[in-house]
Length: 191
Image (tube, rainbow, N blue to C red; front, side, top):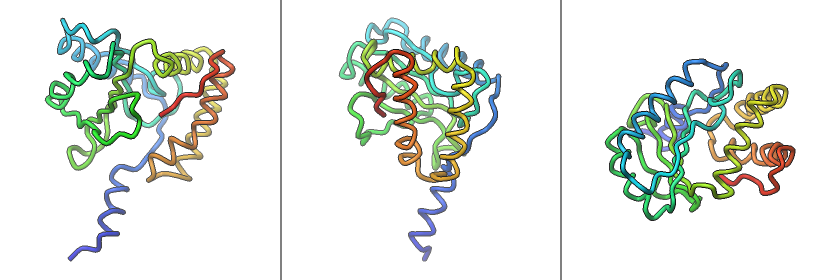
């Protein structure tokens, strides 16, 4: 019988964090996925906007090679209608997500794929959470030196927390809040 610790270690390695150099193909991958999402949700009045966010949306920025997409909704209750269509596209819904400000979906996560390719975050449109994420992305797009500082931090955190996604994300929080403050946003971005 396999040792449970060995199984957990193997699963963590399969879903390890790794940072790679910027890939210009990310823009097209995001554009294609957004086009598919718009087709699936056409006529759905709960969808207010769909945006490519995160590090893959910042030209030149090293990142985890995972396309992050925000779907802005009028309400998370209405957005519950997204679960089945997104699961039909190969996304897994994280029902136990402790962050009640968003619904979180992952495409390609083991054991359902060979590695994460996309994350979809369904959040209330024009909320602080939505605005902070867009502002952070746009600030890094306009300030390449800040983007390089962020890349260096991410490389370090990959070394420190390569198999612990929550610790990796938590360790970025203070930095993200400092960038948002520079950008004029006073509330810290919450996961």
